[in-house]
Image (tube, rainbow, N blue to C red; front, side, top):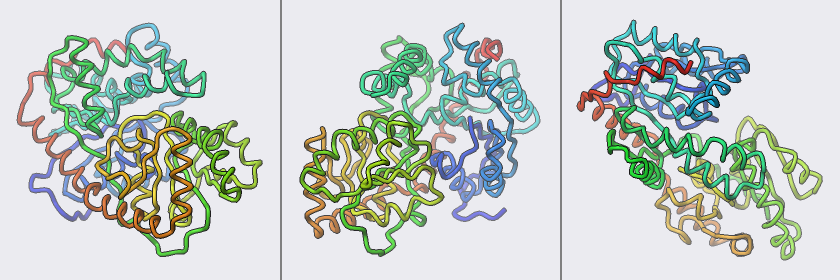
Length: 428
């Protein structure tokens, strides 16, 4: 394996994930890429399925070793049922299978790792169960990504889907308790945005938890070499909204765009086209594809042509948390962006200069119409947006911050490493 930009202190990292990182699951994949380039020796243990062959092959080019463990529907269902009988969040039970825990525990026993990196709440309990009962374990660094309880609060209030609201309410209180205890369960916590850090700190205080492990903001980046302006002519009067459409927050945003915002736009400009680009759109979105002005792509092998060809990109997020990758990717491609405030709270971009921000359907439609009518402003905002992500959202900087989390966790040599709650083992 060859690396560039080597870190001055290469580490042996045990990376635990609830799925194979991939360009779709962009944060863990890009962090792995950067950590490998900086010289770290990485072993990946992840839950997988039969459909992950290509993703695993790509990961073997980044990691010294890749240990996938198949976690089927039956194993997941059993883990969910066991969680429902207790206090464990369903998210934490997502891949909590005996096979995955046993593989991780065996890897801990055989290797002298410097740090265990845990990707997301979905892998948190797997790691805790694996180290339970071990005489010693490396520091545990959790990349929580987002505050899931904050996401659930917003979904319960704002999702148009009764199922999404019910699932959020079902798991909300237990997720709050689990996130509140991050400080005594892990040695360092990374999170994508200051708002999410505030949410975790508020949970700690409200549940009378001691401060415990530090929480560091490690923002999402964007692959600036992959996502960059192409110079191609943009199509006239074309909007694009991108993201995995099976994700409830993206589904809610797409429905808000098509049901509420676009009728206001079409009243003034009846030829405007909308492209909904992303995997697994639901029935409510697919129904709009009968309109000749609406294209619903489903899964696309490459999102860049859609971002490069659209007049502008939109992100009418109704609710969400963390950094919206869809906004960063559009800005990196030089597309002028109109976004809801919630899509921008984790960014330092200047509204009106590097992107446009609108709250509510009327304001959002007005911003879209104004930008469609002003080619010079579109060009200016698109160029400024690209310059912003170049300054603030390179993955190299995020990887360096993550290395700081590793170093702090090792330096602290916290007694928590040796006091992992043995009861976690009973949950598998």
